[in-house]
Image (cartoon, rainbow, N blue to C red; front, side):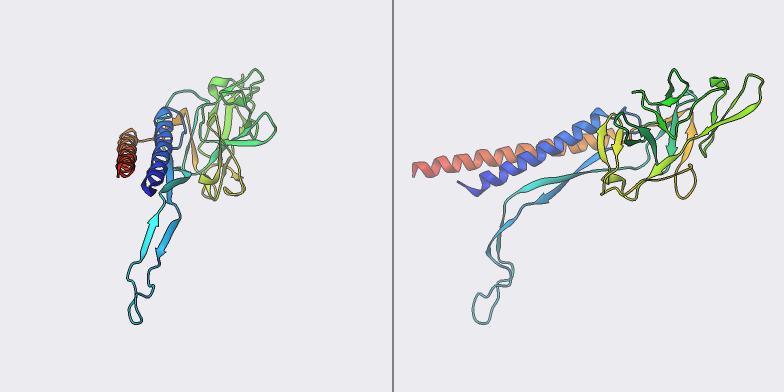
Length: 260
């Protein structure tokens, strides 16, 4: 079999994976707090027919050698955690992080998940929860105050007016940071899980020790750039078409060899 058939096949598979990544980015262009992904490529092992620097005679060396590649492969997807734009919603329980950090969420299995999506609401007990009803950690419960008067400062301190109009402190929103955020594992539902690659979570009040600050009544938009993703989409499509053409050309050569 011609080497070009196998090499072109790896190109098709790699570009298909790139299309998958780009499609997922475009599908989440309106997802609050979503961070775009990028496919990471590597070339495969080479067959060294003649090594660079090999002796061509007693006094001369081969300047470049003969090295035949075996194609490419996608070895990973890297998330880009650059800041998305902030949009004002007017909902007193919507929170946006400006800078590094993640909200902490209690998952059904008892572990802690992390998210940049600050679309929060109150449950029947007055506790701050996600759209799926998962508790925000540390737990913040709106009791003894009027919900419409709740104010959450840039430092995460939550206060509200009781029924006598007196300001009461009701809790403290904390966020977490990681030494390597791209090492987090994506769980879906705008959630991430800690891994050995991300490092352990470091928690604290917003605005302290390098953590981002909070903006109440606002959400962070996805950081997907539609124009950039469309360029990536066209690039992947063209590369896929060229790899397909390479397979067709190799097949024609095989047919010709069979006739000889």
